[in-house]
Length: 287
Image 1 (tube, rainbow, N blue to C red):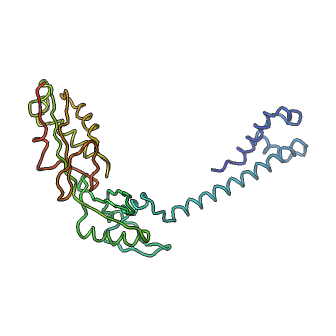
Image 2: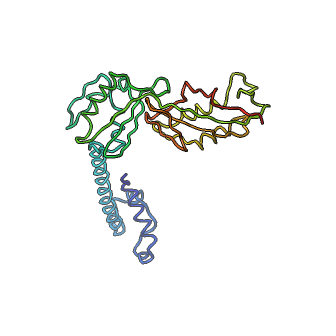
Image 3: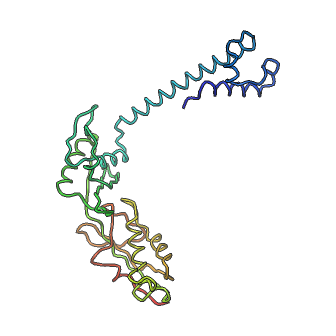
């Protein structure tokens, strides 16, 4: 941002004050404000100060022009289609179900933004093997869920129009990947029951809660790290020692596969398999 003329003037005066070779030529300590009050003076010192003001003015004009140029460059940068992963993600989130695209400023876009029609609330872009893979989901409450068939078909047509020519897109909007997670949990019987229920808060099962919260709080297309999950369980009140027995994951109709350390959901989101609930996969062991 451009400095004011007064600020530039005062900085010049301050810099000159550090130059001992100019001591005999400098007037008494002054500032832009004192210069302006002496503007009509005819003394040689006042004329010398006027030269400084002219220089400060020229510098100010240059800085204003640079600011203007920067604004124009930034505006142009926003208008140019970059085709980066972040750009594709933005296009996913801009999709409006039920709105027609218009050819505006040499590209397809909406004539008006209507956030009530922006059904996609989660999106991720993955590059690889010459392909751009888009994962998208809407929300049911706070839970990612796939687009409906009609929403998905409309989104396919939308992306076909806004994407860069020649880009090979693969678009998915699928149900959550499912997990089977088994733990042996050594617990403190003074705090938890043999079923993992908090003695002081009946109906609360903190190990189940922390596992579901940990998975639910992963960013869209985030990575499940089993070491971090075990650390989270370790912090649960009444837990003495959690040991991971096994973890498995699957998506679609494929069979379960073993998770060694990390897992990234094919759909971009994951849940505990309802057919393998934590109540049947967490084994509580008395301390």
